[in-house]
Length: 261
Image (cartoon, rainbow, N blue to C red; front, side, top):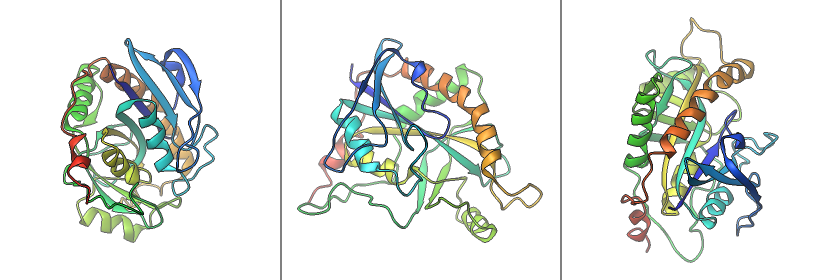
């Protein structure tokens, strides 16, 4: 059985969900990953957990070394990645406290490197359906079994951060059919595809974004309070999902093979 990687976002990088743990420090061509990587087991399967923002949450979304993070997990033998991310809701029906299994994204970032291929090779990797359909189904099936409140699909718009969006931006994102807003899915999902890895993310809704004028504007205290409540559900969901993952690979690994010039 190949190793499964977990990239934990705000409030969800708890290595205590693992058994038989050990810690690895991995060097990469792109520098150090955000944190040492904790290896262990869930449901008898090998798992590696990395803290996206660092264990002291010292890296803002722009400063996260996404390439080093993905490369390090790949180097350790991870073929599948489950990620978590805090997000704001852009739709009335996506309530704080709920989970969204993303099926697409909009890239609204500006200062991030989004490819491993910069010098001697170019990769035009297809991203029409950027998240692994098999992992998404595993997550949805597990969420149903756990009776969690979730949405089986949704489009994430990733902004640069670290600031929150303006009201004008929030209305714009709603007009282009984004469902939730976050700061980290891009370039993580793109790099995972370039690395030939299956990738799926759980977006944990912490608040309504500022388009909803009857709600108070988003603040970090609100985000952290709701995130703490969401984190336990997300941990249960990851454990249940990992127990379902089979060794057979889907077609995600093939995208990069057909993308290189």
